[in-house]
Amino acid sequence: MTHVVTENCIRCKYTDCVDVCPVDCFREGPNFLTIDPDECIDCAVCIPECPANAIFAEEDLPADQQHMIKLNAELAQLPTWKSITKRKAPLPDADEWKDKTGKLAELVR
Amino acid sequence: MATPIDTDALVIGAGPVGLFQAFQLGLQGIACHIVDALPHVGGQCAELYADKPIYDIPGIPVCTGRELVERLQQQIAPFKPTLHLGQTVQSLQATGDGRWAVSTNTGTAWTAKTVFIAAGVGAFVPRSLPIEGLAPHMGQQVWFASSPLPDFAGQHLLVTGDSDTALQTCLDAVGTAASVTLMHRREHFSAEPARLEAFRAAQAAGQVRFVAGQPTGLVTEGESLNALRYLNAEGTETDLPCDHLVMALGLSPKLGPVADWDLQIERKQLVVRTDTFATSAAGIFAVGDINTYPGKKKLILCGFHEATLAAFGAAAHLWPQDKTLLQYTTTSTTLHRRLGLI
Image 1 (cartoon, chains in turn yellow, cyan):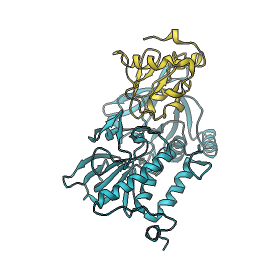
Image 2 (cartoon, rainbow over the protein chains, first blue to last red):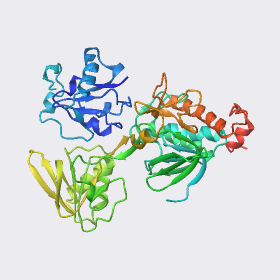
Image 3 (cartoon, rainbow over the protein chains, first blue to last red):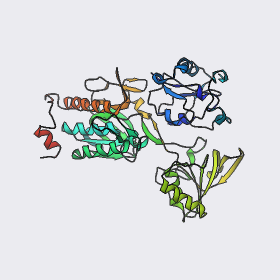
Image 4 (cartoon, each protein chain N blue to C red):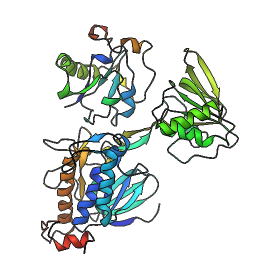
């Protein structure tokens, strides 16, 4: 079990979630945050923090986001994706991308 | 450090499960101390869910986090647990005679025969601004709103945040401070209507002003803080002069030192056995969100069950020669005596 960041985060990266994570399990990429499944303790504190509703518990993940379980785990292992523990400014056009769907092609590794 | 307090039981964490732990220990005739990082009891129920409804407490169709905490306080009152609030347990070490030496960041220390870790997702600590260089100014010119604040008379005060605490910190300084400014990324506050109204009135009277901005750094001269640098609504970097900066950004949980206590851990959760909720160390129990075992569910009501069996486990640990009897609160005169009914 873990929590998973879904496609909703792509090109938004509000980072509100990282502030509340008790175990600092978020990793930051250029335009997406991922959760390291080996670190996440399923406390669920991050879920209501996300302005884009991008975070789900693994078992509550929508059917069209199942691929994000594997992707979160994979991205968390990339050496260029560093731990992020303090909130920072969202991406400049975050509000425009917030409610868009099908953003997977936009993901930058 | 003060002389350690000798106790049969120390409960780390005053959330719902830590409070109920004190109740179950009381029924077993074990007096306890409770320590928590927050200045009040309730843990996540008070900090994250105070006004939100809970529907799965047995026998209570619905109550808020705050109501649940109030009821638990009533329930444990007969056992008079000693509360130590606003301090975080830093170290937990074996004493060599089967007891545990525990101490907090404010210097309180215990020698405890049993320890109950009910620390949830960790200690709630104040959030700070995501900017560099705050540390040397902490306690001098930069403050957390949740800690004791100095007198701002004649000073230029800058407060950051959007909460009740942020607004109240501004209102408290009106009349004495040379100026009071509140900064948040947008002019939208998550505060109680009455406090918001008071703030708006002070704003209209020119006693406080609001600046929309995203802090980016500190402007210093030698050891002194002169201003906060921020991105304004137009995206331009600007300096806002201030003598004092108060961060009222709320609290977030941090697991902190629990992970360093040399107990068996799986994914940062304490591994327990499910008959007594004992950890890998004799005399240390873990209950609530911080423990893990096959089938673990992070529910308050499961924490209540865990605390009950942990109290039986503690009684067996404290008095291994005695058989721990199951008694009912309905009929047992021993329990009635402990509950202060007779």
